[in-house]
Image 1 (cartoon, rainbow, N blue to C red):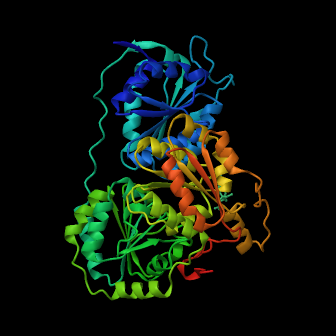
Image 2 (spheres, helix red, strand yellow):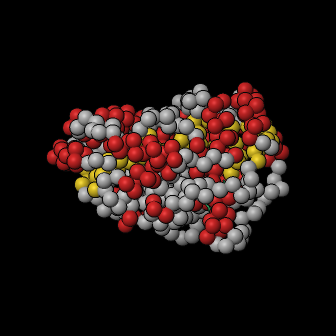
Image 3 (cartoon, helix red, strand yellow):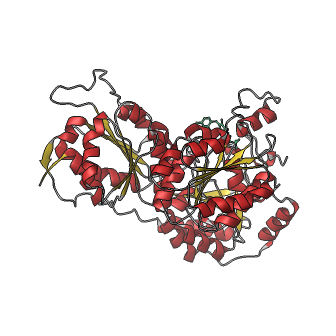
Length: 551
Ligand SMILES: Cc1ncc(C[n+]2csc(CCOP(=O)(O)OP(=O)(O)O)c2C)c(N)n1
């Protein structure tokens, strides 16, 4: 069968099981959009307001569905608008395939001549992609797409870029049916290393399990809970690992690190063995990586061996898929020992509960009304940390947040993608006035694409998280962080065809949120939070758990 490159691209996407793509048109992807037009019944096209929003949407879609997200953009500015989204997916290990158009190679080669809207997007994104391709021959396109999907979702997932010159998309060639690219079989986890890990756990009096985003990505939550329960040991999580155990689990201590709970950080400081799974031990977890878990031997399980000894030196590294490793480790470990360690943590927890301000009350009200099944998406700042601290997550993949890149403006696009992945679930974006202002044009996409999400703005009238640092570490000199108090978010919502609400107190929030839920429409709820409400506890940057500040 002879097909154009564009038709081959769409055919191979469908072959890969893709049923939803995000894309924004342009001159050098017009053939691809033309091919999409014919397959609209099989492949839903969601058009964002801005390519950045589209990449974040593909990312949110991937995180919630567990599938690979796809974003298509034109050359030049379309392609450069993807960069933040690609970098975000790279830092959080989210599988994406991003397709860009480029200037033609034939009949007159326009590449390398500063042609209109020509950008070497491979060069630009090289440090933030797992792999990238410039396709120069239509005959290679199908296998390129197949290989790109294998690379994006196998091993440690991440973004892959396929740059397609216009003539390669327009030309026809013989299309070969699938079959060549199947994922390589997973490397087995070393039994010897798992036995040594079990032995270290046997010798430990104060063990701590620490899970990162890799546990969620590997769908290893059940295996994690089984191991923790079998050993009777406490579990702390990074921001990315938060949903791995339900918040109410008796062994769960919450988030560890810069804005982690007192109990998790105390356990990190006191433990004599730390078993880290699917984590890069980033600086938000280990501010001073030389003094992280200072009394502990460290076992590190990760699918990506380049993480071993990168930030934290480990005593034992175990390469492998988190789920397989945890499942194989469970039968080797001893039954729970004396519970003195758990009692010590419980006593500490009682002495040092989490402080709770207005933001905590908003989050508890969201949880009460939205239910356990809701997907919570955040932007970046204080509201993100409050969500991590106070929202009781009960389901893996129930939180979509920009962990590694910390990209303000991520949230609304990601929420739209989350809704596309799970249309029957309630999707709530918890955002700040600063982050929301960055990409609020995506309200247009939420409304026109009929992907209703509820955006709750914890509006403190300031760029709160940076202002907090200025107040704490820069002598209260709040340079450039008191902005945009004048924006009327109710009117903004209405202008985009969404519904807007304003809430002045946390007490009034529950009823308004209920109305937003019942409306079934895209809603924006503008909520007051005092400009001086801070995120605590806090371990100042570059410090260790002993330097924790409670107020
Ligand atoms: C794209 C981008 N620019 C700048 C920053 C630096 N930054 C981190 S948090 C923050 C403040 C966020 O303000 P807002 O969204 O209102 O949330 P709040 O902290 O007030 O809850 C800023 C400016 C960032 N993370 N991302």
